[in-house]
Image 1 (cartoon, one colour):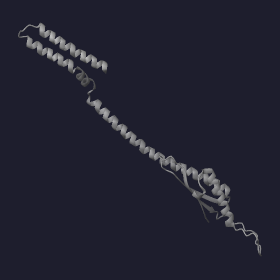
Image 2 (image 1 turned 180 degrees about the vertical axis):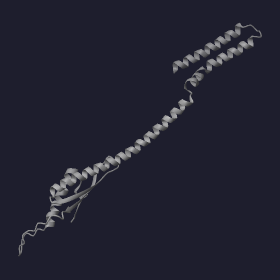
Image 3 (image 1 turned 90 degrees about the vertical axis):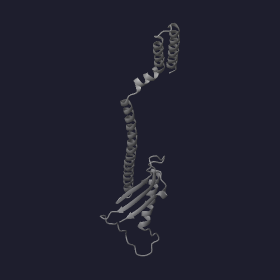
Image 4 (image 1 turned 90 degrees about the horizontal axis):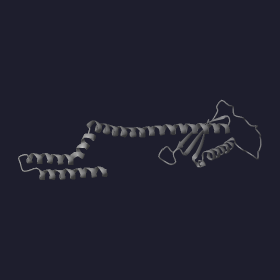
Length: 198
C-alpha cells in the first residue's frame, strides 16, 4: 500500500514538472492553449489513475450482488445450524433419558425379583448449562405382578416376639434400591422417590 502511494505521488510530481517544462519551452503561439489543455488532462489522468483503476477492477454489480447473497446465505446457515442444534440437543436429551430409565429399570428388576419397575428421570435439559444431563430426580414405580400368587407364611397362633410385616421388608428393600441408585448415578437419596402399585 505504501509502495503504491509512493509511486502515485512520484507520477504526479513527474507530470507537473513535465508540464512546467513544456510550458516554458513552447513559444507563445496559438498552439500554447491546446498544449496547456493537453497537459492539464494528462495531470488529471495521473491524479485520477488509482481511482479509475479501483473502479475498473473492483466495481461490479454482479460481484456486489454475490457478496450480499453470500452474506445472507451465511446468516441463514448460522440460524439453521442453531435451530438444528436445539432440535438435536432435544433428541439427544430424550435418548439419554430413555437409556437411563432402561438401565435403572434393569438394575431394580434384578434386585426385586417378581415385581416390575417403571422409572422416569428428570435431568437438566439446558444444553448451555454446565450441568447439562445431570440427574435432578428419579421416580420409581414398583408394580407387583398380579399373576403371581403371594407367598403365605405359616400362621402361628399366639403371641410372637418378632412381628415383621411384609411392608417393613419392602421398605428396607426400597431403601437399598435408593442407596444403589444414589451410589451409581451420583444423586442424593432425597431426590429418589419410590412408589408401589398393585
